[in-house]
Amino acid sequence: MEEILRVEDVSHTYQAENGEVNAFEHISFTVRRGEFLSIVGPSGCGKSTLLSVIAGLIPPSGGRVLVDGAVITGVSPHIGYMLQRDNLLEWRTILNNVLFGLEIRRAKTPQNIERAERLLKTYGLYDFRNKYPRQLSGGMRQRAALIRTLATGPDLLLLDEAFSALDYQTRLTVTDDVYRILKRERVTTLMVTHDIPESISMGDRVLILSARPARVRELLSLDFGPGRAPLACRTHPRFGAYFDHIWKELSTDETS
Amino acid sequence: MRHPEPAAWPAVSRQRALYLRRRRRRACLIHTCQIGFLVLFFAQWELSARLGWIDSFILSQPSRILATLRNLSQNHLLTHVGVTLYETLTGFVLGVLLGAGIAVVLWWSSFVSRVAEPYLVVLNSLPKIALGPVIILLVGAGAKAIIFMALAISLIVTVLEMLAGFRATDPESIRMARTFGATKRQIFLKIVLPANINTLFNSLKINIGLSLVGVIAGEFLVSKAGLGYLIVYGGQVFQLDLVMTSVLILSVMAALMYESVAVLQKLVSRRFGG
Image (tube, rainbow over all chains, first blue to last red; front, top):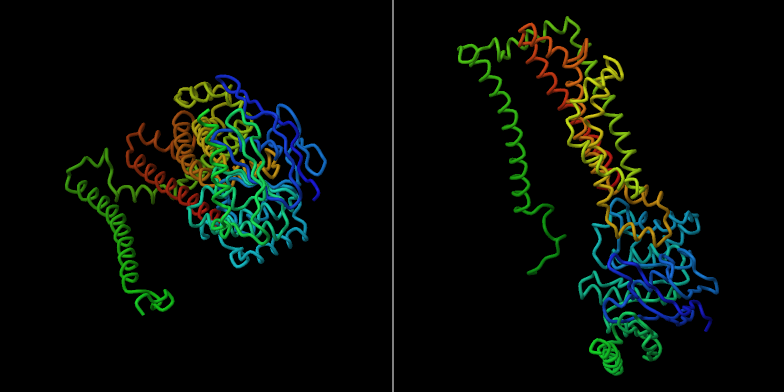
C-alpha cells in the first residue's frame, strides 16, 4: 500500500515559564493510505502535541512531517483534525456547521456543498440539517462534527481523543459509527486516545509511546481478520491478549 | 399498554395544561402588580399633596406635573426632548462604535492590550465629570461638549465590557477554527463576534443609561436647551414642577430606549438561532 504520512525523527520542546519541556523526541513512523493507526501513551506524554505537530498547528523543534510527500509547514488542506469536543457553533444550523470548514477554506463550491449534503444524507443527519446543535443528541453532534471535517475532503484524519467527552454508552456506538464512516469514505486515520480498548477496537496498528520525553516504544500490528467492527472486536479472543500486551508496555514505563 | 408512546397522548396532557395555565397566571400577576404599583404610587403622591402631608411646592404632585406638561407642550417641550434625545443617541452610537472598535484592537493585539491595561483601569474609576471644565474649554460650550461628556462616561465601560466578552469566547471553538486554518480575521468574524451577540447587546443596554447620565451631566454644565437644562433652570427659579416633569420625561425616555435595544436584541438573536 502507498504511504501517505511520513513522520521523520520529529522532536518537540516547548518553553514554559519554569523551564523547557521535552514533549517527545526522535519519533519516526509511517502510515499507509486507508490505514487506521491508534496512538496510546501514558497521560501527559505529549500525544496531543504530536498530533498538533502533524496537523501543522505547531512547528516541530526537530525533524519533519510529510503528507503525500510534501513537508508540512502549516495547516494543510489535506489534513482534517477533530478535537475532543464537537465544538459545533450554537448559532449555526447543522448544515451551516457542517459547511464551516469549507467556508474557512473558501471552498464553498457547489460540488463541495453537494458533497457535504450527501454525507449528511448517508449518515442520517439530513433531516436535521436545519436544526440547531442543542436539539441533537451527543452522538449525533459528534457525527455532525465528523462530517464537518470530512466535508473538506481530507486525505488524512487526525482524531484527538475525539470520543472522550461522550458518556460510555454513546461512546461505544459512536465509535462503531465513526469507524464505519471512515472505512466507507476510505479515510486514513490517526487517533490519539488514552483508552486502550478503544485503541485496539479501532486500530489496524497501535503506536505505543513511552512517558515524557516520549519515544516510540512499539508499533503493534493487530489482526482481527477481515470485516471487523469495533464493537464486535471487543469479544474477539485475541482482544484480551492485545490489551494485556499494551497494558504491560504502558505500565512498565510508569514504574521505571 | 403500560407505556404508551408520546404520540398516543392527547395533544396536551392535563398536567401540561395545568402547568401552562399556572405559568400564564403568574406572568399576568407580575404585570398587574407592576402596573398597580405605578398607579398606586401616583395616586398616593397626589393624595398626600392634596391632604397637605407633603409640601407640593418642593415635591410637586401629578396634577401639577400634568399641568406643566400641557403648558410646556406649547412652550418648546419637543425641542427640549429632541435636543436631549439627539445628544444621547449621538453619544450612544459614537460610544458603541468607538468602544467596539477599541475592544477589537485590544483583542487583536495582546501587546497593545497589555500596554493599555493600567490606563483603562484608572480611566474606568476616574469620575469623568471632573473633566467637564476641560472638555468645555477644549470643544466649546455647546452640544459638542455634551456629546463629548456622554462619550467620556460610556466609552471605557463599553471597551471593558466587550473586551471581557471577546476574551471569554470558548477557546475550544477557536481551536476548532484553527484546525481548518482560519486566519485571525476569520476567527473574529465567524467565532468571536457571533458568540458575543449577547455581550454586545448587554453593553448597549448599559450604554443607553450611561449616555443619558453623561448628557444630563453635560447639560447641567453648559446648555441652552434640553431636559438637563430644564432641570437646572427649574431649580434656579424654584419651579420644582418643571424639575419633576423633566425627570419623569427622562424616565420614560430611558425606558423607551432600553426597550428598543431589547427588541432589537430579540430580533437579532432570533436570526442567530439564540
